[in-house]
Length: 457
Ligand SMILES: Cc1ncc(COP(=O)(O)O)c(C=O)c1O
Image 1 (cartoon, rainbow, N blue to C red):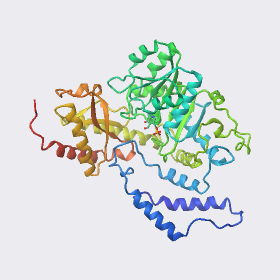
Image 2: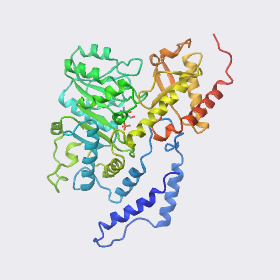
Image 3: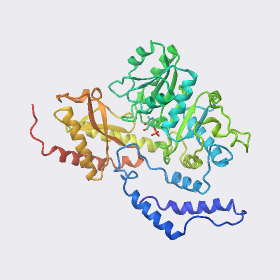
Image 4: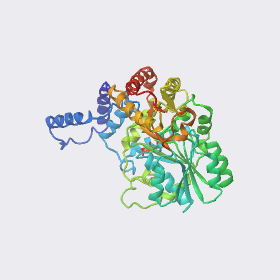
């Protein structure tokens, strides 16, 4: 069930790896005896059972996608070496693999001459992008939409850069009129365009942001941590396609292989269009950069030690599933989007639900229709629980009322936000499971709605 057959392939690869070091003298490992090892590992497995089944298509809640079996195996294989991609001294092969894999990611955005590397995740990658932005426009303001990931406000605090949120429109995208007005004040250094918001997968209007950039000259950082890989998908609506087509015009891009790139956690990626920003990273390390005059990744990244295993996993995955339009990887993304659209159509056609807007990617938000906003919010939580009792795992989100205006009808507006259900249909398998997900959701909703008293006035 959990892909154990890949363990046999891993065993063969380990033998191959071992052969590369066969000439070294034997030595006694200090690992504990096998019996104790097995006991502890069994205890670990037992502890790990206390999790939602993230790997299963009935887990349709948060942004959690299982790593590809080849990523899992390559990561484990690299663990026998445990390379450190800070310096070539610590991870020669995996540093080269990182450079190759990152060049393939940059290639998706049309970049060949760029600066970039892997890092711990989206937060770390955005930190680097804003750290560079802050050095280029010292003291100037960072703007991001109200639906941008909370990390931007917090990172700006860490970097001591002034930060401000820009309101969103009814589709969860940055409101371009509000941005335009705000820019008139002339103190903005960087605009963060979120290419796929965390809550709803909405795409900020990058073409319009680029047009404003012509006039005001700010820096553009594209937070494509979630949505970046969708440049390969060919079944998006026009606005999202237009926005993603322009992403290569941003000054920096963040994309997370550990979200949609089928990688284990600990794999983010930051890219800069102008490689000369590498000068801003300049530092002396008297201990590490000895073995080669070639670029050590630590010379262009904020983090010091980093897992070379992440690079091995990413490299192997991209060898198996190249990052190209029309390929198997792209079809996986397209399937998630089809699943989200199919479920959206069912929800829209069923008067028991309210929907906000059609998904731009593969993230869907909806709520059971109550008599008031507060009742709707309470029912969302109940459907979440009723779904979980049926092994259907959704997520809950708190979203502004203006996203829902078109569909609320007579509902009493007694709150400014709605607690709704959120489903991230990011596994390729979700498409085949849409019917099952709908049946369970419908059943869970009926359970919540059934003992309701007649509608109150
Ligand atoms: C758009 C966006 N940016 C940044 C982040 C933060 O990424 P991480 O959780 O990898 O630090 C997320 C996480 O969901 C995200 O969706």
